[in-house]
Image 1 (spheres, rainbow, N blue to C red):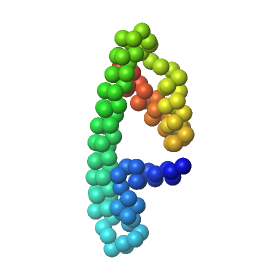
Image 2 (tube, rainbow, N blue to C red):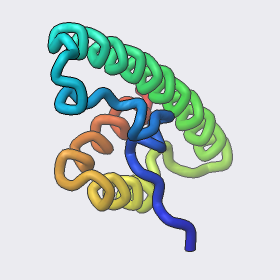
Image 3 (cartoon, rainbow, N blue to C red):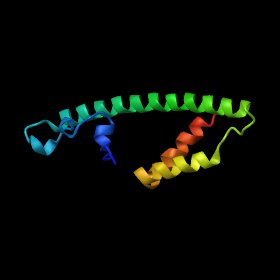
Length: 107
């Protein structure tokens, strides 16, 4: 079984790329904060793009399911997603999954 990837690796970064203020006491704290905030902004842009992609995929699934006589929402699948997120991220992960599901259910 393959080892799970770390959060930093999964996000496209490596531990070496993460600034460590303690590693260089001469480094300006404000410069570190500014640089890390830029990284957060870039990550947020990627997350938003991924959520939009997820919304499109979910819309396609719902459209096909409805056209074939099914329901728009598949509750068993939603429970699997909630369990997955809470297993990976705890209670806040479940909240995040609920938000994603609400965004992806459409109108």
